[in-house]
Image (cartoon, rainbow over all chains, first blue to last red):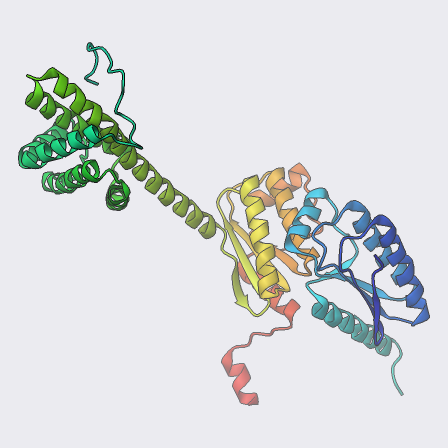
Length: 130
Length: 303
């Protein structure tokens, strides 16, 4: 099943609705990375609220998405990991190191907004006005 | 119990499901006998309970009062052949006497004593007519055994229910997740962390993060006496799992001994934010959340 990718301002939102095969996951990765360039997106949110299982391939793909998107200039945040899923992931040692996470879509958007603001402030700090 | 020595009666009228007419008649006769001798049998029973040193947690008057109601319920169950009333009574009785420390063997013991007392009285009444005695006992024994069974099972069930309830309560109490501020939780851990508790602790924390939409969690381990690599790993896992839900974890209250142990055994806590004590942890969490706590004097002049 193909995952719908929504464009929301500067951000892309991919909301996973059901369990995905490895092929679906790879397809999602390609599609997201391609759209980051196409829409000049600043942030990517992958919503996994509907997933009640996450295997190693899924976790690796999510990590790849985050790293590849960063290389293309977009920050990625994974949102909606269920408590049971989080627990199982940690038990299996799949901890998504180096990838930002947030509680839900709302938090994810707030996180990306904050990141963008900080980036602007950094830039403004480096180049004094006037 | 009594039919030994006599040849067993071939067409047994024992089936409790379908009591034959004669069994019912015999039970009626039996009940009439028990009603007639109520006072005497009851006293005899209470005496034997005291002599056998059962129900030591209760006074003599209480034993006698309970004995009376058990006796009446007993006779009623024999008469009607239904056990619901007795079951309810047994449950109610258990509820009252379990908190006073009455043991299972005591409850089973007193019911068996009553059975014996009544059987003895039947021996006494029918000792001249051995055939009749046998038939009476045939009618009496299954019912009596079933009563004993009902009461014992009722008691044990009640006890198990209480134990389950208490276990639940202890489990809940052992890991309180508290919200101290909007989006800030604290989890004070006290005592020993075993794998099962660590698991439950983590699950409870993750659920709380979800429901309270927490962004920062302070785990205080001042009350944890000792730490080994297992416990440390549990802690690391809890921190990781919380992060997956988007919450930052600050660990506080590591004692000097624990810090030394952790360094010695080489647990990697680099991923973990640690602050000396709970106060520091909460202050750090407030900073992360953008709170600033000021004394009132510093605030009012501006207003």
